[in-house]
Structures are given as structure tokens and as C-alpha cells.
Amino acid sequence: LFPDNLMSMAYEVDGGVAPYAISIDWGDGSEPTIVALTQQGDFEQTHIYDKPGQYVISISGTDSQNNKADRKSV
Image: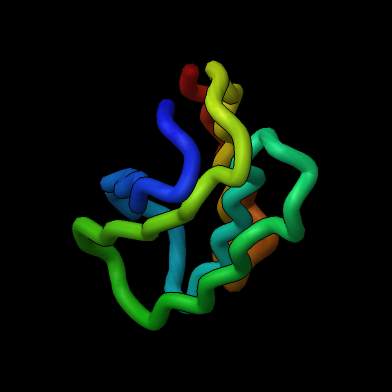
């Protein structure tokens, strides 16, 4: 990744019981992005990195019944 370029990450919420709380850790030490969703579907979040490099992005979600799911991506 190159610094100061907008990076986009698509993700899907499927299953569980709405509403959902989604947390995205961009792997660069910045504060995670927290998203509240009221329905399932396809979504996208963006982030700008300050330094070039390869980062591990972690995304986790919790539904209204406290069921959890997570995923990591490089």
C-alpha cells in the first residue's frame, strides 16, 4: 500500500440477528473503525494509511444476541 491513498475494503454481513456491531482494525495502530448496522448486506469502509507497507486487517462483528464472527486479511 502507498501512503495517503484511499484504501477500500468490501465486506458482507450475513446471518445472525440485527442489529450488528462491526469493528475494523486496520493493522496500523490507528483507532479501529466501529460501525453499527441495522441490516445484513454488502458494505464498504475506507482508510488512509500514513506509511507504506503490508498490513493485516482484522474485522469482527457481533449481532444482537452476542454471536461473534471475525476474519483477518492481508
